[in-house]
Amino acid sequence: MGKEYQEIDGQIQAWIERQRMFFVATAPLANDGLINCSPKGLESLCVLGPQQIAYADIGGSGIETVAHLKENARIVIMLCAFDGPPKIFRFYGSGRAVEPHDDDFDALAAKFTDLPTIRNVIVVDIECIRDSCGYGVPLYEFRAERDSLVNWCKSKTGDELLDYRVERNAESLDGLPGLNVARIRDP
Image 1 (cartoon, rainbow, N blue to C red):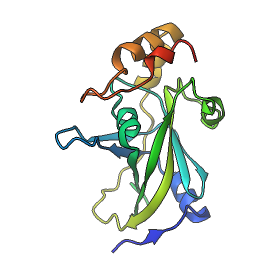
Image 2: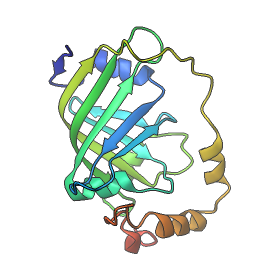
Image 3: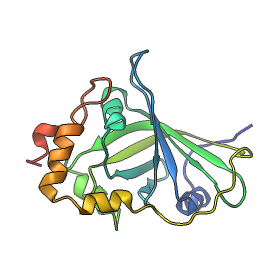
Image 4: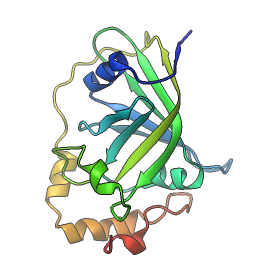
């Protein structure tokens, strides 16, 4: 049986910082809506405080997390130990997408270095932290970050990235509002 924690203490934060990958899950309110679960990497997760975490959303073809958060704010972030002692942590909470036109975007984005671009920052106010054993999680050895996303971003001009976001990130697969594309060129 897992344990529940009230906040991210120094030991949990150190464990988080050792992980190379995490997963984000959200869901729309509609019973027939698509549940989203996305793997993330590139050192894009950080602890903002004892009950708050954030990650830099570099971007992609989908905008499910942002759309779901705008609709209902429910989110869980899960990290697994793929090496060392087995452990899983889940951080349940309310999330929000901070877009480049939002007042706190620059301060949040500055917490992440060496990323090719930041489409938005997802901030999670943690309501519950639970761990579990992770005995069934296989051992993996980290070799390297993939360079595909970084190379793709570097191959685009700033305007090309904005065009892509306007075209692909305005709404979710279920038709929910995604990025505020009206503000994309005018933050």
